[in-house]
Length: 476
Image (cartoon, rainbow, N blue to C red):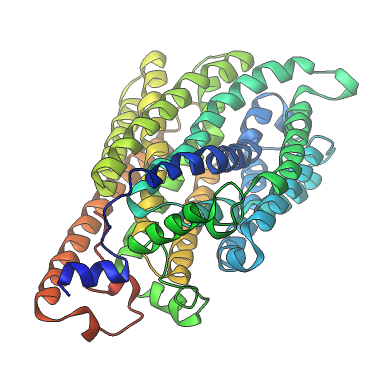
């Protein structure tokens, strides 16, 4: 058996495609992606609509100062971070078709309740439980998609659902623009209706997803037996899953192994920087626009174009990333866009230039996350190691979210947000630096693995190495 055949037998080098059966991925796209995308759109919408409600009068009505508003944002992230790793580790055991819809339905109920709160402490309670229910969603969705798609096809799918985050930024502005005109209906302020209507829709979609979210390829009712076997085989051939259920079973040892992987931590640091950018812009874009002189209504409306631009760019970039396997290059490109945007905002005094800078910074921030998510998922195996790495990445992302809640407004006052802008500019540059470091590290590891493959056969290698196997090639 040649080295290539041995490598193929353990699943790290792709076999030739079957043109007839390879069309299955389009069928998977039609059934799985719309549900997953709506999950994340509602997650991001329900988490960040507080920014729209703030501009619409929530902070004034609940008599909150900037410090208390930052506390309300931070309270969401503490349970959110705590829930991420445990949720990912039990996802396969409980079943994604049960765990994910349950979380969605519960957070929809909590979002709705935010519309009836009368006090600041009531809002804090809602935000805490919102974070607890939403914590496992993004890492869970990335892990779930890795059950369905080979490594080279994963980023376009992750981008397809993550791009809904930028879409939710646009959609949230449009919704808020319309909903705040309901001010006074039912003796409730306009901001309350933002929570009530968006929360009720989330509950309804959550209940429907118990019936529409498939469990896994082997149990997919929309695939026939030949198609199921082909999907499972392709996932094993590309290293997306283990060779059997035994290889992918839960292991405390694999959790520890994950903590020793340098590339996991370099990506995690980049996640922290990008997470700070994403949540700073996600929560505070309406407030930034108000500081530029836009009215409450116009601030909601003018927040739409930058997020819509980010959505379009993310679809294009993810296609190119999957086609060329360029996860690191895309991350660097995203960091460059964000750097240009924040530099424009920091250097210019013109409101028009500052508004234009948001097209660059929002697009850069929101394109970085799917590239980092795919890079992380592509380069960790087996299942427990990948689940842990994905959770670590999003723990760091949401740690950046905590910093973002304090950075704008509390630590850096409106309308210029000078210290915050400078910090976000530096973080954009550091995201580029850690991406370059990771590319260099992974490239050096691939070269070492190539040398090992010339000196030994696959049968001579210790089993259970996962992504450390000489036959597992890291994505750059």
